Length: 384
Length: 135
Image 1 (cartoon, each protein chain N blue to C red):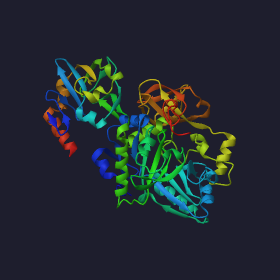
Image 2: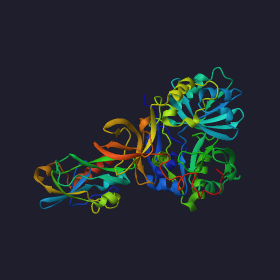
Image 3: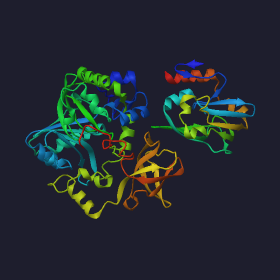
């Protein structure tokens, strides 16, 4: 059962500079300087994350569009080459098997980036359903290094070492460039709520990590004047939570649907048959009985996963993710509650260490989108 | 004394749950050790015990929390809570900055320190305990 601990190209750096932890079988940095300074570096300037633990599959061949439209919920026909979208794989019941970002590299070539915890499951699901399509599915996870550079200074940081104009890559668009002479694929995507890029260092197996290390080092140097911080999984989690984004295994799983999780923007029921469509159509018609909501604590205590949520003397749900928000300086959480209670500003109670603490339902993101995140007003340079 | 990277003042008692006790006559001040605060890292919230509550040695009387984790405060001594460090409500990071000083957690009226002390460690014993943990 126990598989050997896996490492990424940057393992030596993480071990030397940060504190590591085991996540989805990988020994990954949890923090370097600390979760809070790393989190704030991304909100106020720029941070870099090693996310080479994630699953990456290449789907290619004349049947790729039809295949992906059948196994995923978003509309792949509407994805033009060099653009990306957020999507999900559902089971027949509409339960979420995985969530991911899909980039269209070429007319007949796609890159799917999915959760590290689902590396095996999702790859096998793709293979299993690929038989009647003219396609190839390749697990490219171990030959592509992957970093995220996130924050309002992400573009300026990368521009210093890029050989093309990055303002041309708009949000949810992609492109090829060279970073410090190394050829990379970039997508203007991320998991923090901020503007930023995800960087794929192509053809970089673990056995020859030189290019990945070179790009990492060059980005740290380029971002130095902005106060760039290397960021661990701790800040990655607090950033995505503040942004209201789901973490697979916590906030979404095979027993939750996109409608309940409020990610139905990634489901296109108007397209042809896809796995889970009937169940999702039915739920849309009938209405979901529960919804994922954001909860903000009114006091100082911090909600944690599995804490009970109470309303009018009754337990109505449980926390799926909870933490201290470095921006708001209070506890924030996600929970599933009956749809009638999923109303903004509705008061709720969270049972934390046997005490009921006051909270209220708030919208995502938790922070003020005029001050933080990719929509912030002073975000010059890119038309959104 | 300094053991590995941890500060362990000589004049305190310690528990295996990484709390310290500073005894002054019939009262004592308690807090968490340098080792505990370094393990937790950035403390963002302290659930303080209630003033006037009766506490029994090893009982959980509150928590010290970082962004990622929650750690119970197991009182190293029995007695009654006389005072709590109200500064921690606004500045929980005092626990990181000065765990044996400004980061103190509570002042306790002792009831049976003679018995309590049998389960506590001296600074030398706690230092050995830390060395063993870090091996």
